[in-house]
Structures are given as C-alpha cells and as structure tokens.
Amino acid sequence: MYVGIAVLAGNGAAGITGALLWLSNRLSNSFWYLLRLAQAAVAVQVAIGLILLARGETAPDGLHLVYGIAPLVISLVSEGMRLGAAQSELEGVQDIEGLQRSEQIAIARRVARAEMGVMTVGSLLILTLALRAYQTGGV
Image (cartoon, rainbow, N blue to C red; front, side, top):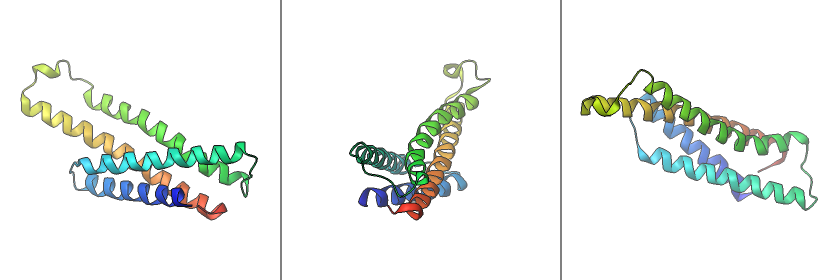
C-alpha cells in the first residue's frame, strides 16, 4: 500500500512541478530528483507485483495488472522520447563547439526544457494510470 501511495505522490509531485516549471519557462534540478524518485517507486511497485504474481496471488481483475505494469512501460518510452526531443533540438547544429557560449547555453536550455516536457507528460500519464489502478483494486 505504501509503495502505491509513493507512486501516486511521486508522479503527482514530479508532474505538477514539471508542468509549472515548463509553463514558466524555468529549469530546476528539483524536477529531475522528484522524477527519479517517482520512477524508483514505479520500479519497486512493479517488482512487488511480479513477486506477488509469482507466489500465486491474483489481482482483482486483469485491468489492475495492466494499470500496474503500464507505468514502467511509460517510463521507458518517455526516456526514449526524451532522447528524441534532445536530438530534434540539435538538428541543424553542425558544430556546437564552434558556436558562441551564449548560443550553446540557449541550445542547452531548449534541450533541457524539451526533455522536461516529455518527462512531465510521462509522469502525468503514470499518475493517471496509478489512480485508475487504485480504483480497480486499491493501491
């Protein structure tokens, strides 16, 4: 139960923090710490769920299993999309070393903001699925 609450709270905190930062065009390391804690909670929850299944315990219904495993899949897909967001920001940049320092910083900020946006959406999706899993069978 506590791990489920950690998934809900962690992804809620990361999603809200990321959305507020993204909307205000600000960057903060605190988002990434919250995100990694939320992802760790998801990994622990999936591991516990798989252990329970291996021991022969059953879920209230099949949807609960889907809502339990989907957050891990979303985390992995979000990480892949984050790389794509960074690459799209770097398209057309031939020699980043040859750019002026101010241009390098501007590009780095755009990359970080794009990555934060992708990961924020992932956190909010996980939050939504975790809420639904709670409704189908408890945390």
